[in-house]
Image: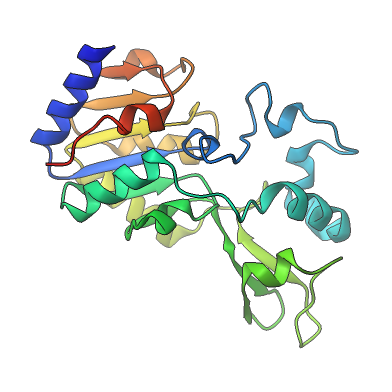
Length: 241
């Protein structure tokens, strides 16, 4: 494994337009649960499956039940950036990393200092009234009870992409543009099972594809370098120079 880390270090040293594509595994080392692991949300018991609760149909039909789950399981506001978030921010500051494309909604990349972050599935830190579009802070949601209402009477919705909802076109266009221009793509902490987000990596045109994930993925065979370790453990060993 040391040789693989050395190869990754060399490729990062030789690259100037790195793009990082990350999933839930990037944040599990910060204490935020993922969905598909043994301890993930899909393997916990609720009156409804998490994927049903986090659907637009469920939000519209049972908003109170949605917010009970959302406040309990999706708002991990005490979580702090880990070694992976911090190293990516360092690489961006050094002019090596062009952007982060993330499936996560926790805002930890920005908290670590990353500036150019394409949030494919939105962010818990943005919320808005569905009637008048007035914005609300995440604290307004976390500290409230029941279904949060705007001063105009409208229902407040988190700016996160629920199942059955489409991805934001501006975010997609920005991520695709950066992926096409990248000279190194590092994929980390994702099983690449969530579409259409996972399909974006097909826009990468470079010759060096790195896949870092704690467990093997169906895409390992496509990678030029596959490392089966936690992403923070790997990136924590990288020097920014």
